[in-house]
Image (cartoon, rainbow, N blue to C red; front, side, top):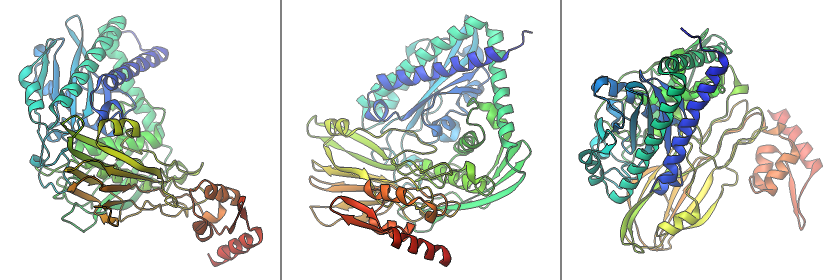
Length: 583
């Protein structure tokens, strides 16, 4: 048997990655909805013939958990001899390996060399509506998954290159926006056609047998590198806990997420014993979603240069009580599972910060702050569902300040550009800016959150807001301070702004009403009194920090002059020395 040399392994690995990336470009460029063509709320991946993920494009980390089991389920349900070139399978069911919430629709296609199955290609795309009790298919007050939309079982959507109309029409019939769904489903089909063709070409070039050796070696290589990364942590057990604000609009009690990370030589064990039970709200996670979240954490901390494939999982052990919020059971809803995943990341990083603070970020905004608007657009007389996720702050670290206005951890989507939004929907953006003072103080400052104001231009629209970290602020490390929490606000008929809950559905909006979304900032790193005075001055000049917080948080006295701001050196030295003595 021919050995796989290191150069060939690197070439094959990058060729597979390029296939996944080409699939992603195809999907984005041919999609119909703004959520995919503009915000890139989609992902692509490559699998071997046994169902192991061997390459993924850099889109949305959460999505890869959605596809973690889908090929395995295909191989369990459909005999290999029944799978033909041109077949394509579709599903979105979180409880049967098809996804992590219903709006994410997965499509999988086999790749062949002659008559031999050599692997699969898959993509996943977040559809703006898949039915359910509210437009957008994620209700803040849902209590079962049956309220969240259509559950698509694992079925063929294409058979030997031809669309299966029964499956296709069943999906588009059960959505408020059928034309948009058709356009996005067609884009997913096009993406897989491109990917299956490219994968067959690569496998044919190397021969099916040698290609299988290469993909197996890629899994082994990723495992070896991940184990080497884990060995850089000292052996021991490290615990941390954090909270979700609540389970939804019918609850005011915080939800505990608790984890103990145990490093045992080259293996990491993550145990979620003590975490809250599943809740009657949309924050529950299936076990596959939990696995991909743990995968992300260790890929980010211990294996940044490791090929992202299933070999990484071999170095990880994940335990979570069945029926907990991180390993839920049917029929609880899972629509906003992403925010629980974000808090799981915070808990794992918080545990590892105890032994490796130089490799861990302070807490980020760690939420997918979602604003969903729906109604009839008077310009087209068509019904629309517009989904937006507002970025926030990224945590500071030992190399510098956190980033401002970015998506973090389990999400990686773009914002919808204002020009595209206002062209397609009866909404205008009146304000879109960074939130002054929202970044946690520290030697390195946390990133800032965003304020985005939506002015409504027509009557009878509907709003759903899904947020987190409105009560529990993003924490700092090594003496860094907390970032500012987020908030939702509503002004009706020009009246004073009123604060809304962090999770709310069914808000009726009319012309002239305003929704304000404020996303959380992020935690700081290190003692704020060690931040250079000149850096504080620059923050004030750039309107990232107010002159008042410069004095309170950093002990820096600034005087405003007609030319700008100047440092009161004597008063600053006095205050900083007094603060240090006091501390």
